[in-house]
Length: 585
Image 1 (tube, rainbow, N blue to C red):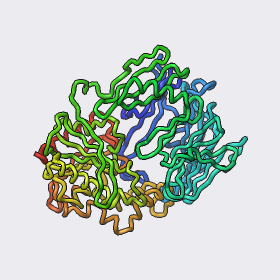
Image 2 (tube, rainbow, N blue to C red):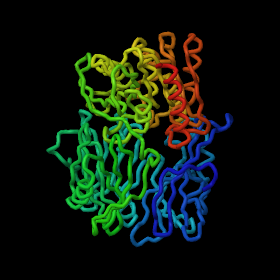
Image 3 (tube, one colour):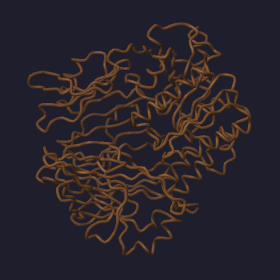
Image 4 (cartoon, helix red, strand yellow):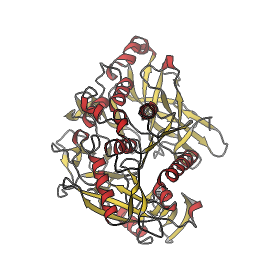
């Protein structure tokens, strides 16, 4: 691997060629930051020839014979029947003929003026040679291909509209459009080859997410699962047949099987692992074998190679082999009423021996707002050290969140306080030994809890967290084109958070309420975080110090937002463990 690259994904192109999606984060010199921010994450797709050990980067910055350079190369399709060694990739390309005249607007203006053209390539994984297959424009967001790797549709996300085009001959015909309303783009667009339609989750006028089929011939879209009242969370298409396989609906993500054979395969595996969460994925091309991930909240993921012909399951790997003989915490799901009459679902994790009057750690929604059956390394670390853990699942309650009402402005913090009060009443928790911990948005919630509910918490931990909403929005505006930009991403921020000029955002920012904080505060932040700038934590540290509060800052050298490296997780756990020991005992 080239130095500094970290692996995000692996996949086989054929039996001898391994594809590796990797990324590298770099800090830009001040003179070159322009509209990209302080840290930039570059992605690279590499092809490894296993017999020889040779590797090559596919779609490198300079495009041979194309007269330009690319950014944001994305793998679209691979292992395509009848096209050996060929992968389909998309990238935004700045061609030399348009690059220099548009440079000024790339820095200061909108996506449409950038001179970038979304381009679809067929790339030879052995030689690296690329061939242009189709071109969109600066607003193209997704490409949809058929089983042979041919483009059949693409979409465009403009500031005022979202549009889907189908390819007919050499032309593109509009088959769907809706006006932009906040996050107007469709995040997951797939082809159903059986019905010759695109599958998409589209919000209704009331905001409920439904599954729709958009025919490629331009006829009227059709709502699928019309008898299901719950919102659609996700859907899956069989990669071989290119047909709808399963749909997940409702706050508990209930699975509805569409493909009977896929359901039979899943159920045959699930029966072998009762009481555990089973995910069947990555089947062999003939369907005779598949991999399965099996876990529960107290059992780390184990990966099995399933053979359907001889009904065997062989362990292929373990996520946390070091925990094989460690006694882990136990969990129970609860529901409680909030002071404003809402019902919140939550999970309570206790050390293996249980106990009364325990120290409590509230894990705020965000990074840890996950399925109750998934193994949670952070919660289990806390339980192993003797702490009780409360995990409110606000995203699964169905509570209205328009304009960020739940997340920004105190609602999620109030609901966490209500959960703490319940555990205190039950005698499980000592009210004087409660800490609130979160990452990203959860870091904001932790700081907001300490600032706006100071009597509840003895300490607070923010990991890669947000402290200043107007400053964060200013950063996003800078990234997406400056004060005059109408980039669609900014419309999403406006809809979910609000306008940076709205005075309530400053009032809802913990950095402006540092004087109210009574808890000890630990700030942890990666210096290469490209999602939440490290300045968010540094600014909070400065405000707390100025107010005479107890604050500690831990910088993570070379770490980005995701905590996806073992060394980074270890550093975070050591810092949090030491801080909790000092603050709650």
